[in-house]
Length: 490
Image 1 (spheres, rainbow, N blue to C red):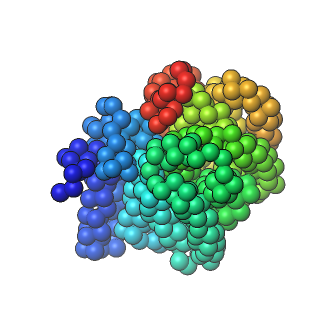
Image 2 (cartoon, rainbow, N blue to C red):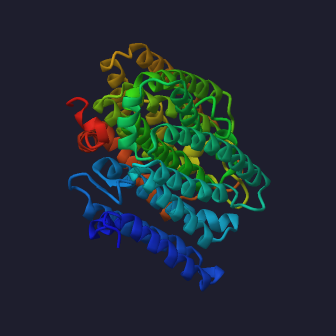
Image 3 (cartoon, rainbow, N blue to C red):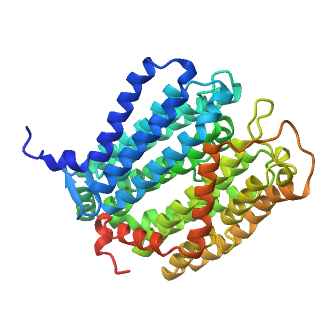
């Protein structure tokens, strides 16, 4: 047994190991499960994610622990993001139970891929080495390539999967080339050693090139402009629960990886990468919101909204302070509840006779399904940053962090973009409450969708009026992010 290996390694990897075991078990069970009982596999997947969450709760709370030669770390920062991933996976599978039956898709392969993507995300949040981070990213990406094209009879889904795969592999190539340049100049893939050696190395044109390549690769994963071209088509073509999972889980994992690389591994180049992200944030917020104004497909509109949200989230990265990082983490958690809530309503609109993802499909929803309409109203107001919803508190903290770090104009541009976004969010409300041209059969809120919708609605309202527990958890988690711990007090 290697000298660096101990029982603590397995103990600290308990959440990932439990989820991996659940995934392998599901593969075996799927082989013996008849098609008529496939829905049972979705609930087994939920149980596996819940078991991994319990393991995460049991191992969390101690001091940061690096193991296996420092390729992975167990800290509160990673725990915060892993909780988001596991909850996102649970929401996705619960939303999918009835949806897959309507689409005629098999549950087994779907559930295994969702769990596999979640495992990759967890390593992206805990990895402190380029190799670990890249393997986690690839694990997540490959699962999503397949999930996006899962509806084999749907031409739009197939087209989205091909676009996502081709553009995704190209961006991964850029990212890997940037990482390889950094390795070639420093002789290490460990982020902590990388930070030390780059600081000793000094400014170098090749390092700047490597930095640009890594920013481009990560820009694709967070759907930042101009690397966003895949998002609208993929969000529209993918199965709706996967669109929700992609917009929350994948985005959160990419931001966790981004923070690991730039805050832990490249602090001495902060002046360079902050300038790049500053430009990306402004362009991403603006183009995302402006492009969303004319969309008539709700999933496509939420795709551009998600692009704009990436611009807001970059504000926390640019601030670079513990408060900025904590504000970004808070907004990610809040965004997850808002986004899953909105997509639950869209899944509810899917019936055997109608797809239900066009604005016109929501016409008169308040008369046909009052609870769904009111819930969608709250989610739209929260995404727009209207008090007293959680979205307002999240944006308030992000913009305040930017002002504290003297990025006043960035905060002003963020506020202006939030005002622009209100137009297309309220447009959804107008269709639900003031138009009366319903199409197709009546939408039914099945119990599984009601659970996700109620949880998301309660969280969106509760975190708007009493956000302190989430704030304290995010602040404590941000303190454990590598060099961030010694940067400045909260």
